[in-house]
Length: 223
Image (cartoon, rainbow, N blue to C red; front, side, top):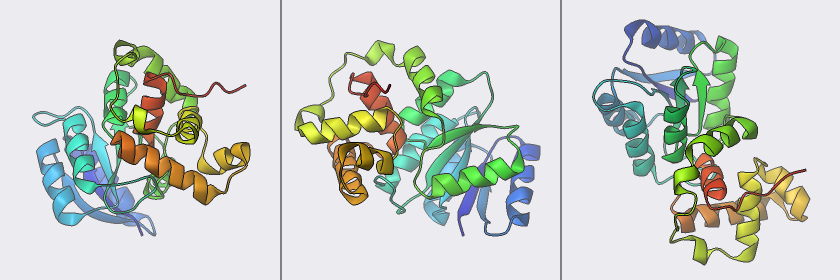
């Protein structure tokens, strides 16, 4: 049963999400927060599985709160030792979405998502998966990642050729099972490679790995 911390500065949205989760079998509300600072505090106190995070809030916004929550969890690829962050946004905030993914959010949804899709999204993120299409993230990266595309990352030199290959396929949007089939490896071996990539690069979510793969020209080109 995933426990969920609901973060939104608008009372009606926050209470509506809480009511939905309370009524849904298999979901538990860990708490509510009206701003980013309160979200960070409650995430540390209640240790929810998933944080539904609004981006635009007064004071500490959702991006800063996401970064602090992710940094505190010491998570790895598919791990479960801390909250995963699912960003709630509107259509006019693509740059904010990209910034949230870059600091470790696991995915994003628009606020008018139907209830059944929201519940499914929470379950997906809880399972350690990303929640966005490769095409959607590629569009964000193409638009917002260009200014840092040639920056150096201290962990890249530590990657083995196989780890670079795996990271490139993660960047292309492939799941571990698809990468395993493509490289004729076991899923467990791929997961180990992904974990090592993320550890060497100091990443805490698969979404960050996708962003880094694109920023540094490692993402594989798929037919």
